Length: 230
Image 1 (cartoon, rainbow, N blue to C red):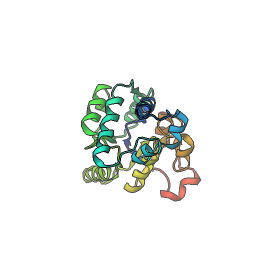
Image 2 (image 1 turned 180 degrees about the horizontal axis):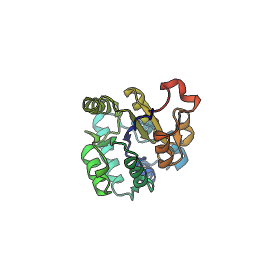
Image 3 (image 1 turned 90 degrees about the vertical axis):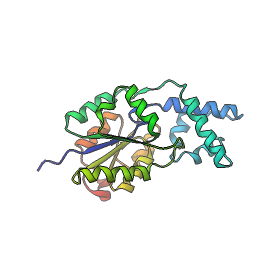
Image 4 (image 1 turned 60 degrees about the vertical axis):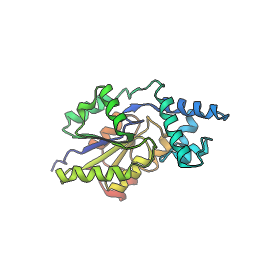
């Protein structure tokens, strides 16, 4: 019997949006104005994580209270907004492949909802998605709570849907685990491939990741987690 097509839940930053260099440039500007030493891409991809606050502490962008943290969050997005960004060069290809395969698609992101809506529209890809789910703040915190509510809403409309999350970060696997769904990771974004492959099936590119979600059996290394991908 043919397996049902998965409902793809895409991450945004670092996955569909190619903004890792923009994020690094933003942090280095923030580090420099505080008198620190810039970090390199290898260090960033080896250490960056969500929620972001512990990582910020590690690189010298320290908040001593919530008001200061709110200021840092707004500073990041002000500087980040000036950096050049682009879609992942394979984003449209992957979205078209998923569409042609009969998959429904949505986005689940830690980015604030209004910014997420504006960016997907700006890049001309908003029409691919059934829903676009962002956060209500700029803090780069965990998206588990918001994703759980979003998934419950989707399941209320289609209890038989088989969801697969595709992202570029360890946190995407954490979110998928919290939701009880499968996860495929892509090594083109914010995390080094070695970190991703230690926790989940990982594609070198966005298209490779989608192919894993659509077709490939889970390797024996991951077979004990939830069985074959559906």
